[in-house]
Length: 202
Image (cartoon, rainbow, N blue to C red; front, side):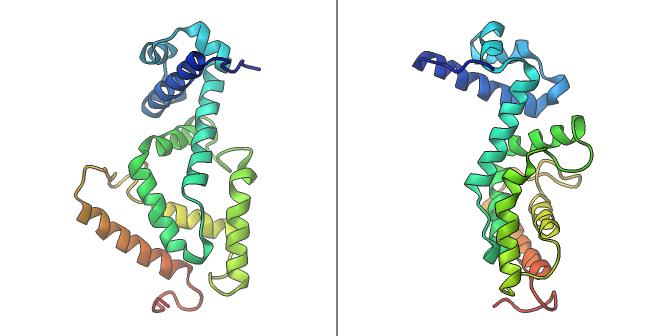
């Protein structure tokens, strides 16, 4: 097992490695990332990086799994308001586009089909339970909870760094983002509502 930092100085180095590696992997992917660039940006050396993380692959694992934890904790699902959840995801992608890029590289280089990670239950189970409960209460349309979740997430990513049409930026005017949020909220509401998709909001 890679060792963990035992001192405040070591902990600071550990954080710098994570920050530098996140940027490196987000920009270049797993195969294209270079340890030399990471240790230079982190102001450390390869021996320290390998001591903490083992190798480049496990360093990526640590960063990617941390990014999944972040999106789960920072943007928790509210199955009673899936449109709001989608908008909050949109906003998080604006704040942290690197999180989406890491997921994209994982899909391209590691898991081209199926679930993005083997431990998907850890990240999905609470969301799926919440959606199923909302369905049982008649607040969300019928259907496989996983498919409902996947659809809402995909809609929230319409302008994310993985878009093949247009990637949004936090530098754009607020009114542009507000317009997209309103459209996203309305489309998710219509897609997940019970009964007719063009039902009026409650």
